[in-house]
Image (cartoon, rainbow, N blue to C red; front, side):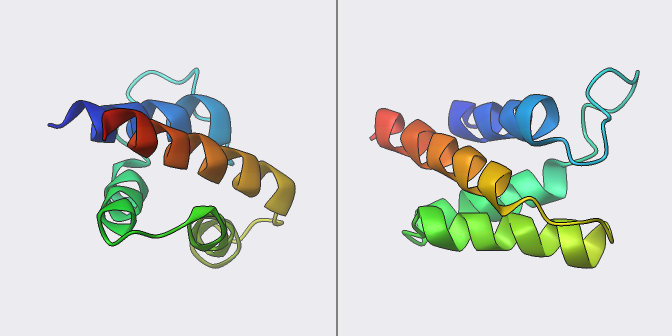
Length: 87
């Protein structure tokens, strides 16, 4: 697994974590599908706005929770920074 994808997985679990799983045993892979999609978006040259929109859509559509666009933008910015560091 590329280290960039691993970093995105960690970020989603420990900082984004909309359903509060980061301290639960066995939760390490819960957001993997979302991390993989974000990783693919980066390879397609998605920007912070597109990634934040995707995360917000996941929260509201897949997880059926209230959106926190400010959090999603902050996480998206960190994801883009991870991508830029790997270039």
